[in-house]
Length: 337
Ligand code: AQP
Image 1 (cartoon, rainbow, N blue to C red):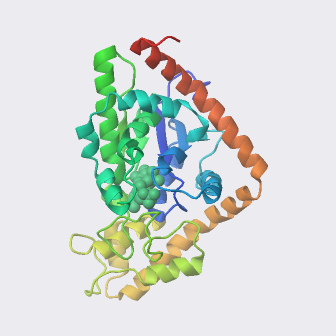
Image 2 (image 1 turned 90 degrees about the vertical axis):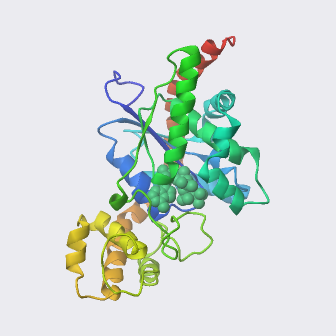
């Protein structure tokens, strides 16, 4: 556990927004890997509800979504005793540190972020300042815990790179303050970016308005099979991985994750068969893998008392670490402690 152990293990930080039920993309690209890192690293994981405020949220549904995201993260394998698992807004150091880092982040850097460009196009009626400064809040999340590694999907790589630039700049002015973190991103054939089932050139996203585009990890088996059967592929009827076959390649990556098979083995398994058999097999592998996660999730959601105990304890442990970094930062800046 981070607060108690002699600092031998490296530190990992990552977060997820409570903007919807997690998709298969969130699971494969990020949360599944978080669970697998818990033995090797001291891990700090967070439901980043402040980030989700960059898009309008209905308060009652949002509160429930924050809780369900916390439970879902546990159901995906994050053990709140092994790792620190907390809710971002319950630790005020995040917003406090983000303000400081805002003052060490350039307008030009934030303007270049592809997520800002994409989200401001999607929400043209609400291009708020939070959407613009999202990356410096993310930098605060990571730097407060002196994280060495940040497991994320490919889409967050640019934000981790900016975090490194901000930390390097701050360290350059004030001396060693922050550890410079590295992103850990799965390889492309291991799920760095899971694509939409309806548009294989677009990433699968929680907030995609088309319900057929993504698999929620809470989808029942029949809905999962139906969505895979209607996934967009091509007219070739050949299961093969590579450029020009983005739809099929995406399904092969998903199948490979849940069966442990390589791309070559999958090609051999479905040689001479149509897409129907292939899509059913992919859907079944996903439904089988998600079933125990769904059972655990429903059990956790029925025990609100236990969930509360976990997130309050998580915030306490998180604050014990981030408080030290915050004091160090304020001292370096010349603020009075
Ligand atoms: N399609 C994806 N493939 C692989 N990894 C993905 N991630 C997201 N989509 C994919 C990874 O999931 C983690 C949590 O993401 P987030 O909630 O912080 O925000 P996001 O990246 O903006 O994810 P979404 O699902 O697209 O959310 P919305 O719709 O709210 O914007 C990150 O590590 C991310 O890389």
